[in-house]
Length: 397
Image (cartoon, rainbow, N blue to C red; front, side, top):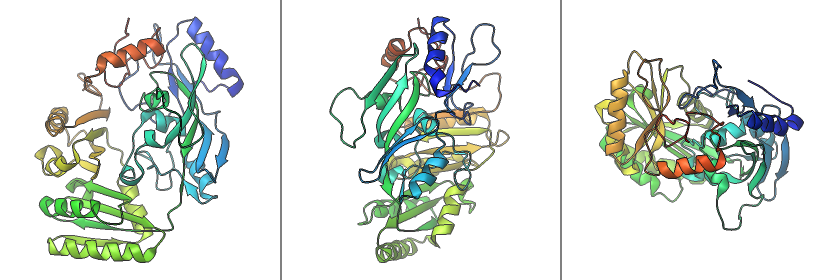
């Protein structure tokens, strides 16, 4: 991994372009093993990695406008601490694998490049919806910008959202402007266990309630530890009375449905949220189905023994397991099941295998994705072999 000074970064990228050297954009490098494997250059044993770890400054925080501009290599944990001092936060989950307080959460640029969101998207939408503007370096070292520094931008080609979820395949993100929110004044929740049918009725009730859930996550039996699936509900408001009233109504509804509900104070809620993103498993899957079909997935034998946390209102989430309890053929079955339920499954991490599963399936827009790749990176230098939506992406000529 090469960590150049900010003043040297653009010239280094230009030199690599002149030499046609392949390389992989990165932040802190904490999740380089996620996603499809990157092909090294000719005669190299591993990919050349370019880190933005020295681009780590907070550029501007407009507290009144609720926006923040940071360099891409700034640690997400550091940014959240800086924003908290002003009573604000990025309404984004810590990435899977982070510690209870955001340790090992990586950089802001890495978060955007992956484009993955957790259960907080139920209320605040995903990473791409909180991105207002970005600066980047193209493969030839040309600097470019997209978006701006205000929440409402002019209409036009949305380049910044194209880079959100690009996994470093289109360019190197150097600076970002994101939307911030006030820190929740009060926060409490419920953990509800029981049969899938009753939980599905409660899920619909929670989504239709006057106080929108901050989080409403499905938990598989393997994650809940109770032998039954569960729903993790979090409510946030400026009024503790409003939360108490809403939780009381949800608890009564759960009891009427034969479900068991555990009231969660703020500390217990944070503990369970942390529990749903920590593991040393060697299978890590990102999956999604239509929200109305999520209960079917939770009841499917394909998820037996697999820990899974799925945002109940949007149908997206993570699943993980050890290699000993989840053979690769079952992952393929789970992928087929997600497809049948109107969704998809991506393999972010998998055990070493002679016949590895493709990270993602071919997208219906694969031809367009490849055309964009040729436009942004005609010499195929960036993240060779890692092109979202294209199976085992080879060098596109």
